[in-house]
Length: 30
Length: 438
View 1 (cartoon, chains in turn purple, blue):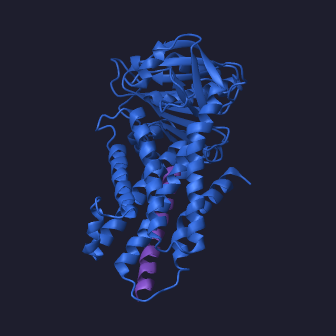
View 2 (view 1 turned 45 degrees about the vertical axis):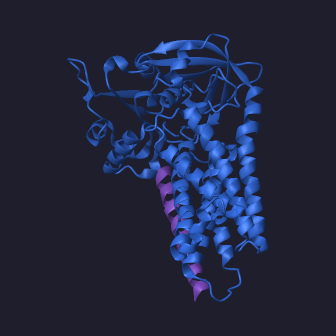
């Protein structure tokens, strides 16, 4: 149960970081 | 505020701490001529460091976190997040080199500036940390040696990366970034000081002495301890502690074991430990009155925090230890709630606590279902592994009112969780403890 929560939190967290990184790099370069 | 709400709050705080340095980049001015891949490289570097740095927190056994989250989940989270952080951190130089091959000259340590040398050394240390952590057993590394290397390399790598980002000073001019990373470094340092200095001092002041070491079935030993000059630790049945024997609490040689005794007995604690050929082999050599140290109590695998009208316990082999603690505690409390215990073992003669379970079955509303991989002749019980069919055969109609506790190695936990899901038991009713944390 807890492991499922942990996995979901990790996916959301790391996914958000990657998306934000791409967004920032894009906004800086245009 | 309930513990569940506190746990959710800490998760939100954790996510915000990780996202903060990347979100803060959006506050930066936008000068012309910025290259996409270079900016992406820098941002992923910040993201990777935020993920890696915070790893000092979940592994520091901080009481407020250990009370809210299962320790094995914290460690599992640490393993996964660290790998994600490492990947993002590694993407930083790789994207930099791919976007501008001229930057490859920074790999030449004889000519590169110190800020680049620090980064190269840090990445090298991170690669060693990841390789030795993921393949520790394949590399036949002793646990305590690996932990010493892991700690020293992690602290050094964190210091080198902080030096790198402050010296490169790209996006670090903003006061938020400077405050954030300085404050983060302080928190990481405090976590290390707590687990490596403060906690060992606390343990030195609260020693235990060995009362007895008794053999059990299944090549296991029950180690009984009494507090030496202090009130002892008041654990909850099902919890565990780190045991330090024949060495200093400042060493890296502590190992986690579940309590096997009743939580109602405040003056004597017991651990039952299977001899696996490592540190566990030395348990039977401990002498009466010998001094040991106990760092605990940890874990949320207990019935006091998870009240229910009945329980289903499922264990494989020595995973039965926390469950015995729960059953013994229930017996001392004259708890009459129904319990079914599915207990998987290779052979009948190696069933640890076999006789103790017979006694407990006479004291409690307890049904023990032994499942043997290699049963003796004329065996009338269950055979093979604990499957959905076996669970279904013995679980009554009240199964949906019960809470389920599973303890054992990861493959067994995964298989049993899957079997319970097949029986429409929701995940929120299943509590697990994996005893292979590191």
